[in-house]
Image (cartoon, rainbow, N blue to C red; front, side):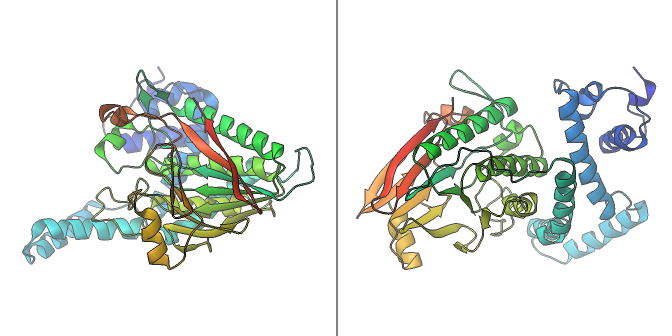
Length: 404
């Protein structure tokens, strides 16, 4: 092995990865192929191909650039010691030491990871992608005369980057992308068959796996920040295909529980969610498409969608705050508006019910049965719902698109 690829005694793991990525992408003093660096950077057993490693290296470099700009790699020992002394003094003045530690930690995280402050960085990443891998609006679908039908696609509970391998289900990055491709193809097939004019996409949450539980952290193959970028790009490419197929595409988005910044829900603040990056990413990434609308004015807040499809009032929630037997009444009383349909995710099951003429529609999960659902004996098939709405009758039909 090239001696330059061996970790040096004075290097921590972060410095070692940074040296390899910089040496290959920037300095170009590492001649080895990207694939040969895969296990060195991503750990044993992660034998990705050259193209995949190269793409990941660019993402890692982007994160290092942000960290460098925030001076996280240039803090001196004296500064660290001074900060520690300040923190010790502050903690001594407080009666409840644990509460103070959490507050200070949360304060630092909020400053370093404030989403509004990073929006410019997101735009820079997207600008680079648009330059090297543009998503172009070039209609390639079969043209047809639309009728009074709209399509409604529910996207939820992808839990991307999770790893599942049991007798019920196998799920990894390759399988995730295969299911996304199949879902896209089936949506187009059914949408063309019903000659829809507009495709409404309700993104109901948990596309990321996040670090809400210890089990989730163990199951993840990627850091949550990297997951967010990958999922956002997968969504962008899916929407671009729909935008080149259908006359109009409306995208609705809400927050969920798996994407929140803090694992402890009691410490979490509404809005502090990695999922907020998704619409920020999609808007500049799809700026060539004048027929794709990333809708953020359709919600009372970031966790409840309220909109209209073919004259029908639609509510959409993730479902982590709700009980299925009371969600319709609770939302109607809270919003002071009676819905015709309520879309819910989170439960990973194909459930439909009716409450005083309002139809409750629960979306299944794309991931399917994982180890947790197997343990509690509540398994289900991986699927997502696609519905046809009509101005005369409301919901005309439903396709449960099975993805296994």
